[in-house]
Image 1 (cartoon, rainbow, N blue to C red):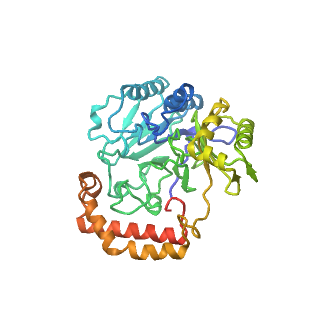
Image 2: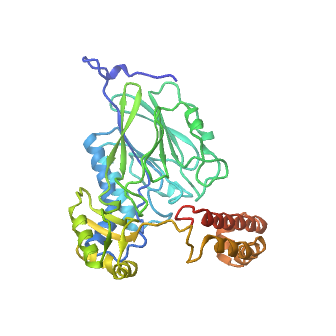
Image 3: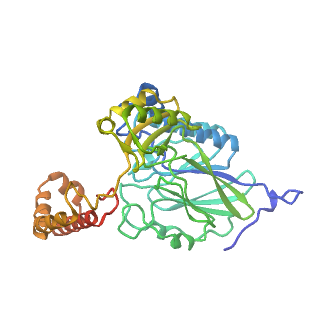
Length: 422
């Protein structure tokens, strides 16, 4: 791979003046935070404001670090149609960066796809990609030439591997960066499928990815990076969320994670053992929750150890939600218990009160190919399934998919598969 050094930025101490940029994706402004309507007013306000606060923190970081540019790689909004506050927040952020003369290069993703990007009137510092893969070139304050290649979604699904339209690295530039909102896959997958090897074949210095909400490194050098989303939206989007501050070190670009989310999701299993009644369980849970060191306000999913034994009244309070309600009343200002559940146990030897042999015999007579096929036919009668789920799938293909899925589900149950499958 050819590399270019910027002699104009060379200092007497033998160092190069660095180039810095921010890589962020999946802001999801307007995210609905489904299932959290019953929060107290303080937590509801925190939750509603969280994506906007994270965006402002991104802007503040860009200004503090005096970055050369900012990359926003798709799903700026949670939907194709945006609320006025969400649009206003994004425009205000872009205006702040414009005032600091910080360029922004952005694209739209599968959530906020735009059939016509020309309807947007962004500040002069913003370059927005349209549906065609194109390259924009900029020159940093240190006179480094950077080529950035990308595209936006113009429809919800992009099933062709767009990477094939990305050109090889330009000659004469110091760095070339690819912006791609998509995921590893093959042609026909919904979200601009790609193979990492195909990205590396372009000889770019950095791949700024979006779409996957978990921070990931698909290749170390050159970096192929998912920054994750700015703010966790659901209970499975755990831990610190933020953006990547990317710094040049010689001819390499090195990313560093910067947490920006004002609110995090946390899984927590308290230290409990033995048999506990309801008052004791509540006291110990509350004490341990209060004692946890918390630096960022958190929404906590609490899982009690599988080895814990509960008295009948404690188990009833747990299953009916009364124990959670009491715990929420005693919760500290920094931690809000969202759910309280007992860890799943192995049920392969006692399924619905029956032993495995009886369950298997019932399955063999009930879950038959003919009955599954009949179920698939009945599902086809639902207009929603026909219009939304089937799409280009023929009725015969749909029947085979349902048959396979239900048979897989049945076998997973018998073989003790994961808890989601069960």
